[in-house]
Amino acid sequence: MALLKIEKLNNILKRKIKYGNINYVVPDMWNAWNYSGKELRKLPSQELLVNPYLFYSSLIEEYILPNKKNRKNYSKSLSEIKNIKDNAQGGDWIRKSVLYSLMIRTSSAWDHDRSFSLDLSNFNHLKETGTFVKTLALLPLLKKMGVDTLYLLPISRFSLKDKKGELGSPYGVANFFDLDPNLKETMTGKEMSLEEEFQALVEACHILDMRVIIDIIPRTNSVDNDLIKDHPDWFYWIKKSEAHKYKVPYVDGLGNTIPPTDVTFFRMFMDHPKATKQYLKSKSVNPYILFDTIKANLFPGEIPNQELWNLLSSIIPHYQKKYGIDGARIDMGHALPEKLLEMIINKARENNHDFAFIAEELNPDNAKKAKDFGYNIIIGNGFWMEPRVWEKKLHKFVYGLKDISLPMFASCETHDSARIAGRDGGRVLARMITILNMLLPNSVPFINSGQEVYETQPMNLGVDCSNSLSK
Image (cartoon, rainbow, N blue to C red; front, top):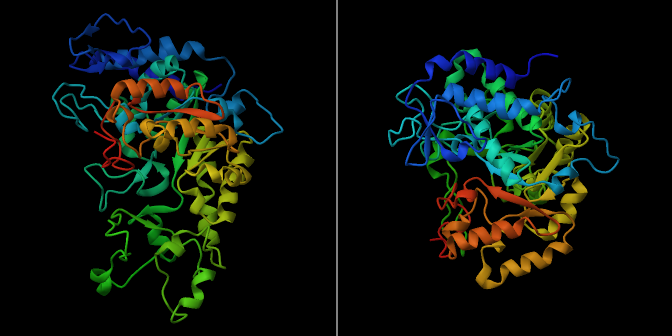
């Protein structure tokens, strides 16, 4: 059998050990597998001074590869590797899983040269933001925590045009099929491609009996998405001369809203919504972006943008065939045309019957509908209910679990919410709810990266981040 990508990575790192006598530290938590290299020095800062090439190659050789079984193709999904065949709806393995959500670029980031800044290329020309390779160092700790599924926030190449913050948002996708080049590891240089490094991470997870779920964003895209050049008719346009007048409609009671600068929407239908055609002053009115067009599940047109639908429904199969992923969350899937959503789910299950789907459905009352579409679990509203202990919302959430049609996340925080350790109750509340979530019925324990170390800085200024609940 051909050399696994994780084995290729190990060989590259081993050849470079002689270059590793440098100032390079990792957090002590990355050594949950008892690395004991001769160069290892434990620092008062709870960091370890290591030879990076030796550290990561030893991780692969001593912790990951001993679990590898001969004649197993770890580039396939774990269900295919184990030859799991179930006549029921596929993907229900996720109901018994423990999920850990992470953004690669932040979750495995560290100030390795101790310069008090996080650099894309530090003093030793090594990357300090997260990479697929460095994420391997998290796996031993996650295994000890009982995690068996990695849920990766978007890993596709995104745009920097009109970006949010310094690095830009991974939800402003420029190309659905390309990986984010920022996740490439500098230690491997040109000897290993970005795609091979992601393959190595997936293989490592499968060897350790862990699964990998990705986030896909089929409804929105960056304002300079690669598709615009060849398919301008898939997007919404205004006259350049009228751009200065283009703004969010003001609605009494809602006040001013800030529009996103880095994303736009796909035209899911080539005509106007059926329900609103009667209100148009003229049939020649250009396509527009408003609630009735971007909520295509509620306001469909009559002419599907079939070529676009075919492309969007091929995203997951691409990652299945090339990387062997095990599941996906469809961002805003409930707002897609129902026929398109069916296409996306069915095409993925044609490749792997046991592929799992997470619905971004926050209302437990809609769990039955999500189940009918083929989803295995929903996100639910736990991240909003659980922190409101003093309002008895936690009690209501727990007692209501038995009545929903699909399991939902048992979570006290997500990447879109305030941190549980930063709320009233602090670490005591965070510890209590995190443990409680491991015991709740009809739910899936969900740990947000950083939750395990009582992180208080939100990943995104979303739900409750300006609320008095959050310190």
